[in-house]
Image 1 (tube, rainbow, N blue to C red):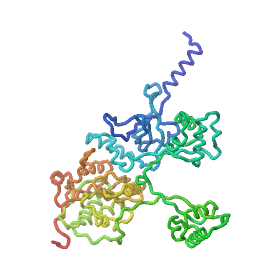
Image 2: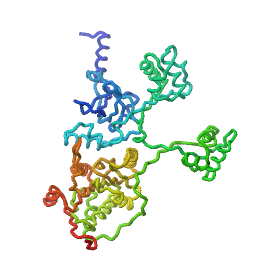
Image 3: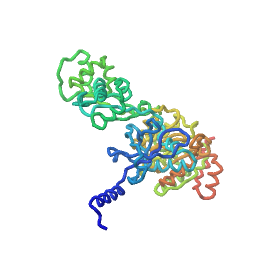
Image 4: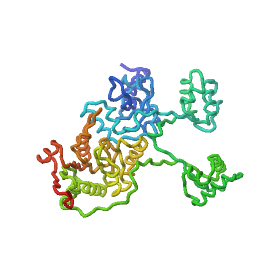
Amino acid sequence: MAHSPMSAGSAQGGLWEEWEQVEAADIVIEADAPDLLPTYTYRVPERLIDAAVPGVCVHVPFGGQEKLGYILSRRAIPSSDPLSGRLRDILAIVEDAPTLAPEHLRLAEWLSDRWVCDLVHAVRCFAPALLGAKVITEVRTSNSRIDAASAGNSVPQAQILYTLLAFGRVADREALRFHTQAPAFSGAYAALLRKGLILERRYVSRAKTVARRVRVISLASDSGQGRISPAGARILAVLSSLGQEAQTVASEVLEVAEASDGALKTLVAQGRVAQTLIMQDRLPATGAGARTHAPTLTADQARAAAWASSAMGSGGAALLFGVTASGKTEVYLEAIRAALEADRGALVLVPEIALTSQVVEIFAGRFGREVAVLHSRLSDGERHDEWRRLQEGRARIAVGARSAIFAPIANPGLIIMDEEHESSYKQDKSPRYHARDVSAEIAHRTGAVLMLGSATPSVETYHAALAGKLELLAMPTRIDDRP
C-alpha cells in the first residue's frame, strides 16, 4: 500500500525523534536527607555542553531549593525515553569550586561501596571545604546599552532592569528580588534571562572557602588627566619609587603614603594608576627555617631508600620496621626526593597528635614550597588554599593527618604512612574508612610505592610482611647508638 506524503513525513519525523538525544548528567547532590539516591539526573543545557564535564561542581534545583553537586558522569538519553521530558536543567557551573579528577570520582564510588555509605559522604572527602557552603547568584546586565526600556511593554521586567541599573548594573539576585518588589518576579526574571538582557554568575559566598583576593596597584602607562591632590601625589611618589611596572598591595601603599582609599580611587578614575585583583595564598604557619640537606645515610637507611627508588616505576609496598631513632624520617625524605625526580607526587600521613610544627618543618626544610600541609588545626581558608596549591601542581607533596590521603595530588608516586599502627588512622564517622586501606587502594590504582613505617607495627601489617605480601625493611639500630 502506497504511503501518502503526510504519512511518509510522519514516519520520518518519528524516526528522527527516535534518534534525537538529550544530553544528561548524573549528579551527586550535596544534601543530607533520608532515602537520598546516590545520583540524580539533570539535563545539560546547550550553553553548558562543553563545560559540564564529570568532576565539575554545579548548581542545580533540588526539592524546591538550589543545591550544590558534582557531576559523576555524562550520558545521552533518547528523546523517546519518558525520563528525557522530566529532566530539570543544570543552573550553572560554580566558580571557585575545586574540580574533582576522574580517578577521585572512581575512588569515591569505591569508598561508598567498601564502607557502605552515601556517595555524597564519600565525595565530601575530596572537597571538604566547599560542599555545604552557600552559593551567591550575581546578576548583571549583558551589556552597557541595556536600560529599563529594553524590557519592552513588560512592567515587571522594566522594574527589575531599573533596580539593577540603580545597583550599578550588578547585584545579588536576592537583593534584587527584595528591592524590586515586582509582582511575578520569578517569571519576569526568567524572561529577561531568555531574552539575553541579563546574565548570571554563581560563586561560593563564604570568603573562608574561596580564594583570597587582594587588590594590587601600579603606575598606569598613561599620564592621566585632572588635578592631583596632595594625598594622590604621595601615592604616586610611592609607586614611582617602586618602578613603573611594579605591582604592590594597595593597602600597603596607602599606609606608607598616609592616604585614603578615596584618593586612590580618584587616581584610578583619572587613568594615572592601574589596579587589579590577584589571588593570594593563606599560608599555614610552618616557620621559615633554613633549608636542610641530606646527611650520609647508614647502611640500613641506604638499603631502604634504594628499595623505594627502584620500586618507583613499578609500584610496591613495604613495612619500614625501624626502632625509635633509627632514622626512618630520613628514608622518607630520600624516597620523596626519588618521587619528585620521577616527576611524581608524594603523600605523607602522620598521626594528628604527632603532626607538630617541628615535624612539618622537617619536610618543608628539605623541599620548601613543594610541601602543602593539611590538618585539622588549619582554618578553612588555609586548607582551601593548600588544597588549591596541590590541585594546580604548585605543591607536589602533601603532609597531613588521616584525611590528607584524599589530597588532589596528580600522579602520586609515593604514599608514606608513619606510625601505621596508630588508631587515629581509623575514621569514626561516615565513611568509616581506615587510611591504611585507602592508601593501599590508591597505590594499587596509580602504581605508587606504599611505605608503612613503625617501630611497633600492627599485627595485620607485620603478618603481611612475614607472609611476603609486603617488603620487610628492617632498621634495628639507632643512629649513632643513641639511647
